[in-house]
Length: 142
Image (cartoon, rainbow, N blue to C red; front, side, top):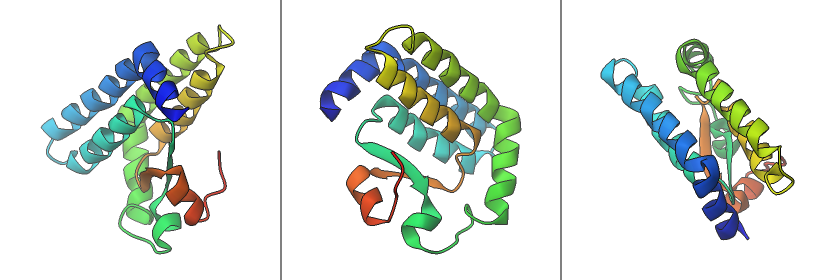
């Protein structure tokens, strides 16, 4: 079921939003100081291309310890991200979700866009894992 969902997602909007994430990553790379954000953009862009069967969870929940992205520096990084790119990617996902919600078949895709909009607001400190790995780490979300 995940394969079918991913193929339909990719064709009907996932490709465009994934390219948006990669474009944000390329712009971050140009600044040199944006390299940590660029890495996150490319990882989440890949997730945006094929999201079904995977989830974004906090690295702290996965590893059971803090790292540079899950502490105070991660919070600061997310604030900077929100101001320069996060809000725009989130708006793109929200608009895509609204378009998906126009049809009954598009509702699952719209819900996925809403999840990605949340990730777009604060991606630092998150990692993308398979749902099975997330369940083993105690992730209880959908």
